[in-house]
Image (cartoon, rainbow, N blue to C red; front, side, top):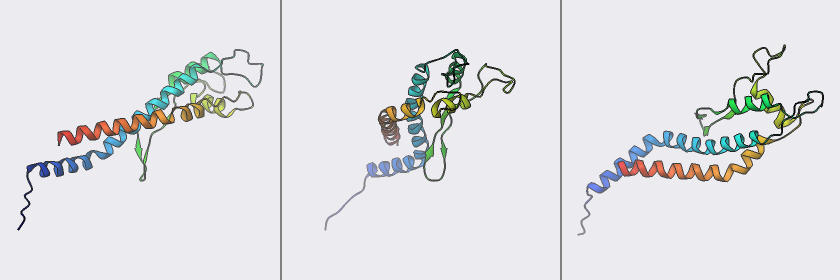
Length: 160
């Protein structure tokens, strides 16, 4: 009769799989964040490349240097969140720029400026800098997420 013995190697492998299952949410979160960094960097470059205008009497207009600087300063990545089906990470503008007006005594909201440039408005020329950044960096972001996931899995399985 044939005899099959299970050695310590299989026990170690099973322990590694259990460890991987426990660490999977953190691995996915790190991977998604790596992809988001690629996209955020491209958005940053696109903001830097935006044309600026100084004349406010020309409508629709380009963003002013102050508005552009505010968007660059306010650009960030939020913490990843699990919504029950998949992980989300948000990239966007936060805070206010230094262009204080009667309507905006704290400065104009950076998110408002970004949305009006992205979609266009009655006072702002349309320049879809966020959409272009997302579409042009999609494959690089996917590759970065895959590489980070593979790296994290390798580290977890190797240490188990």
